[in-house]
Amino acid sequence: MTEGLKKLNSFMVIKSVQLLRTNNKTSSSWLILGILSSTLLAVMFSETMLLPAIPEIMKDFNIPYNTAIWVFSAYLIVAAVMTPISGKLSDIYGKKKVLLTLLILYTAGIIAGGFTTNISALLISRIVQGVGLAAVPVAFSILRDVFPVEKLSIAIGVFSSAYSAGSVLGLLFGASIIQSIGWHATFFLIAPVAAIVTTIIAIFVPSRKPQQQSRGSIEVLDKKKENKVDIKGGIFLSITITTFLIGLTLLETGSISNSALVLLSFGISSLSLGIFIAIEKRNAFPLIDLTMIKHKIILPSYILLTLTGITMFLIYPTIVQLVRTPQPLGFGGDAIDAGNVQLPFMITFLIFATISSFIINRFGNIKPAIIGGIFVILGTSSLFIFHSTEVEVSANLALMAVGLSLTNIVGWNILVSSSPKEYTGTSVGVGALLFFLGMAIGPALSGIYIQMNQSFIGSIDGSFPSKESFNLIFLTAVILSIGSMVNLFILKKRLPHRKLITN
Image 1 (cartoon, rainbow, N blue to C red):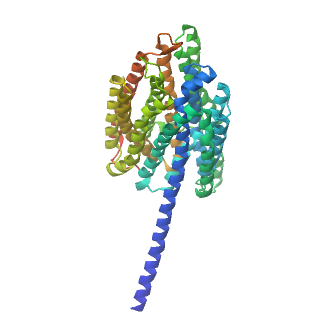
Image 2 (image 1 turned 180 degrees about the horizontal axis):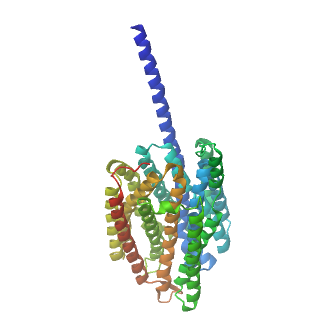
């Protein structure tokens, strides 16, 4: 009897210790999630604060819209190129080390942005900040390490909701700051926040060594090769993206004299893309694993994220222009009005991005995504038809936000959970590249429509976006949303079951 009690007590002690370790690990995982989410929140807070300042930047530096939009395009190009590189580096050297390095660069770029006095200096500071944005796929990789598969969708949803939370805060405070202090103040306010977040990560996020191969001579040689970052691929990828967007920018002028330059830009971009693909095919450890792009599930996820990025950033700057363009072409508002019109979108996105993770965890990926796709089509279609008042625009943006929050989280969720665990950073880095590339293409597309469709208003000096330009932009958003829905049906056919995909 006594021996039996001793065994029972020993069993209970062992189980208690195991339970305590599990609880501590769970608590630590949620703490890491909170810290990483604050990183994304701070980044988006900074970006959204700057968004309503486009007219002020144009006025201060005496530049046209298609030049001012490079304040965002330059930032996103660098982010797009750096994301697969940062993902690769995190797989090689460790995620925390790479994450801290990127955030330190981002903080330095933010501080530099506050002291800029010309457009060239501002663009340089934005390029440095773009390097910091490449921390996003590294953070996703860390979440993959610390959360079990059954909780991963919730973690991704919470992390993604920080995107909209930062946007909400940026709109709430950014427009007022720009109106009363000036757009330079947005940089000075976010710099200490970025520094604090970086310090917290350094202290509380644990370091995890990258997975090592066996010690055999062949494996060690392979490891040395794998540790080489594909610099050539990164260079030609940068040329491809940059020249493509330069071509779009030149196309915005609508001038026949620029036709040769437009063709030259697109020609260089196409040639550079061909060279990049050739380099990646020959490289044993490429910057972008082309076999992943061919994956029947990962490829549609990439397409979904790209279309989502284009749609969101096609609409964002357009709404600012619509609100701030004088009547009768626009609403004749100021920076605060522009923020208020977009605020329902951000708040709705925040709410549904938060609950979407629980919906997906319960019902799987596809059903919520298709419902979201329907909402995006309804929202963009209604915005195309009804955008004559601020109330109409806000309501339609909120409708879009419901759908985009679902499709966006599903895209990331499928991508993160479908990627091989040892290459999560690389795979998610490619997804982030395409997402950021879409975000860079969006403003360039809106710039084409706005610059090529200008109107004049009575005695007011200068030209302004015409009503036709806004109609064309919103129609393009409808077409993109339909494309996303088609892609979702492709995913529906290819997914093996409704639950999360595991390795």
